[in-house]
Image 1 (tube, rainbow, N blue to C red):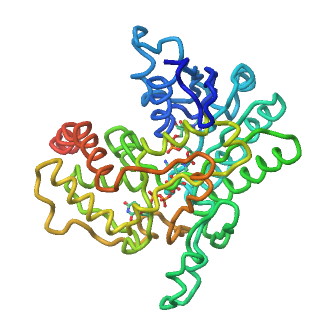
Image 2: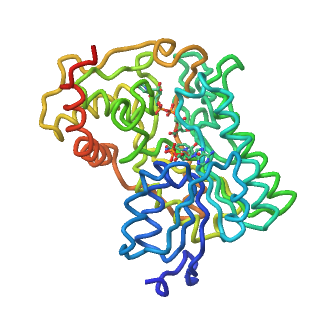
Image 3: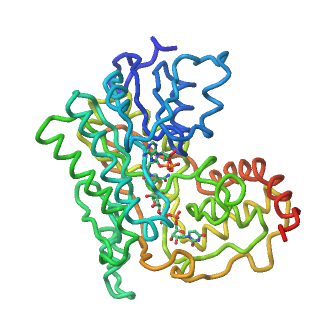
Length: 387
Ligand SMILES: NC(=O)c1ccc[n+]([C@@H]2O[C@H](COP(=O)([O-])OP(=O)(O)OC[C@H]3O[C@@H](n4cnc5c(N)ncnc54)[C@H](O)[C@@H]3O)[C@@H](O)[C@H]2O)c1
Ligand SMILES: O=C(O)[C@H]1O[C@H](OP(=O)(O)OP(=O)(O)OC[C@H]2O[C@@H](n3ccc(=O)[nH]c3=O)[C@H](O)[C@@H]2O)[C@H](O)[C@@H](O)[C@@H]1O
């Protein structure tokens, strides 16, 4: 299999070693699966946790055994980091605090995680002439220009006022006391540092801006495989509500819009970046699905319909309730109004387009959620509350 694979320009793809930081997370676990099952590459998987990739690490009779090594380490303070970057050909950095509930409640941890802790990774790659693929976020665009127009302005329908383009769109955040933007601003500054390392020291880099990638293994279900008071991202929040037959909570009425892309489509884009360095180096890429746009309210309605089909349980009479962001997230919350990725650059450089509709990706994801959690939730609900 290794010999027959060629890149987009017809050149044979030679096996490489990848140092993947944050490999134990949602995206990392899907990327490791793809690399192990479809490529000859080796992965040094660095993370503090490995429960989402355990199925790839054992037993040692797996066909890819020996091609993936787990290294339990925290990049904040581990002397092994530089050595692992040096023995790899490419470093992919996924490590981050990236759940919005943390940004306004743990702003210092958020800024340290998304900027300060990434500094040594960029430094070691630059000093050792190693290629870097760094995961940023679509949140660096913040709010659209259109969101500042009068509510009834027809210009709000003009794509020039909302389509987000890597090499043209500004980064528009709320004021400093809106600490939600601690994450996006830290991501923006690390992007600018990487870009400067490229301009001044020839660092070969690619920056990825994911637009709401969703699928199995995203975050956790509170009280089952994560803290019961934890607040994960919306897919896990709504899945938790559906599993527990509770109304889905719509923050500030669920009017914000998002585009969701299936994790398996997005991983295809990342593999193209890995195996086509000449086409990916020096670029920032939006990776999203502009065809899957919904308001959060529409997402809740669709997930309710899909879950009812998957679980064969009738939906609640009142499937949603509105909550204020202050109540749900606390002080300092703010939001992106709309996230439509411009696809010009990724189409031109990598020829990538997403394939999976929102309904289909929700059907496979909620099937996974129901199969994985329904029993455990039933037990948790049945257990008498400790008196
Ligand atoms: N999932 C998305 O849709 C999305 C969207 C935008 C941006 N991103 C970015 O993509 C990256 C991965 O996101 P994800 O959804 O897989 O999140 P995730 O939280 O599932 O994965 C992040 C992983 O990094 C690890 N990590 C964090 N700090 C670490 C440290 N100091 N040392 C070692 N490991 C550490 C965590 O243990 C976790 O396994 C993040 O940088 C995130 O900002 C993701
Ligand atoms: O995934 C992404 O592309 C990026 O955006 C996410 O930010 P956001 O989309 O706001 O994260 P969610 O927690 O998934 O919230 C999405 C929307 O649903 C709303 N929401 C969330 C949870 C809930 O129970 N109810 C609810 O209405 C939020 O207020 C927000 O408007 C996270 O910041 C990162 O994963 C990443 O940077």
